[in-house]
Image (cartoon, rainbow, N blue to C red; front, side):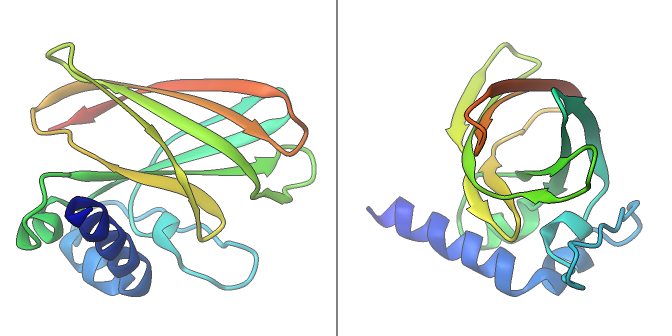
Length: 157
């Protein structure tokens, strides 16, 4: 229960104080995405790691290095993975649905998490402690009920 409270606190902090996380990423490429209402949410604080269109839905993934802030709170998670879905034809944001991500580490370790809806996207914190390539597999079902998959490699340097 205590760990859940810390995770909720960390997510709340991440959503309410984006400048703190952005400051930790100074010197990195900051891809900016307009969320349609001038909101500079977590999607604007890091580099877009991957974009892909799957059956008419554009999935945009952002991986944010949060290890310094999490360490300050005594937590082991190192990266926040967020995905935003839009209709590829109209650009309209798709916000409702179920999203699950599996991260496979360079040491063959695996983490599977359900992502929470937040700020127009879905996200969760993961532990990517070692340098190397991580496989990120995303399975999602949006309002149309169709199950889709997206995958990409992310390198921790």
